[in-house]
Length: 397
Image (cartoon, rainbow, N blue to C red):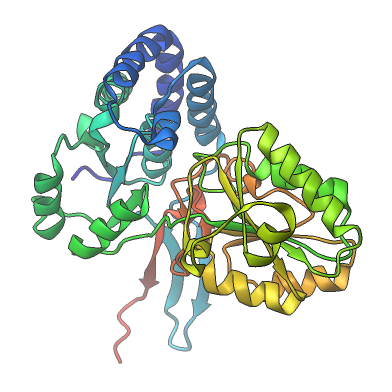
């Protein structure tokens, strides 16, 4: 593979990519319409993620420009040490080498995730879903134009037009060196990659996010946050479960109002044994439902006895992604936030902020529910490994 491109070249390619995305906006949207028309599945969340309209193209352009404005994440000194024998030791960030991104449906990943990997000095292999093939191929064509304009090899961004069997074969016996794999999609895709990959995988896991309404909650804030958490059902940061403190004042009136508001936005509301009985809701069939990420117009409301019970329930059933507590009690919030085992935890704020752009990273490669090597949104500065540089003048041990 080519040597690391100078940061000036990487930035210039990203800025040219932004220009080309704007210039080819109409073509991208029209090609994307073809993908939308040809999609025959019944997964509403996948269909939603497949769409590339003017707003989505604007987001792609903004991502490319923002990446170009950020500092080079490669070669950053993390640690230095002067040995007793005179050697000078440095630890610096380094590119992984080649990053394979496997994703479903979202053409914007072909810009944002590839851009983060490219800016971090990595070669990118893109394996998108068949449902977004036309959109992806058009965007990769723009990548190659941008690279060509700056005398960089098109090999820096490569699209793998593989079917499932070919993808499995590549994961098990790669025909080129792959240093890291990032799957972005549903649980079946992630399980497939984990099963067959022969190199490290960063898991961008399931959502299944919880909101806990504590007995000292501001009820208007609680309703706003739950409704906002369900405002984009295809997002991995959407809310699927709501836990209501059994000691919440005016609990029955609050739950009735919440159900009414959710129903008005076409959300089907299910309840646990207590809530379903008290509010004439359909009861969940089993506790297994608490494990499910819905990616659908569906939410479950349950009753819980205490903060400790809410923490235990979230740690048992949630996807390790995001959780929120609604309370005026700072001490209770701190206890909740310290002990809930999710990548991002909120106090009186919506889980919909779990996003690289919203959390100050400018964009994200993925949202990791793993604890190694980075948890939560993976931004530019996280898509690097490290390398030791040792300078001597003949020292031996």
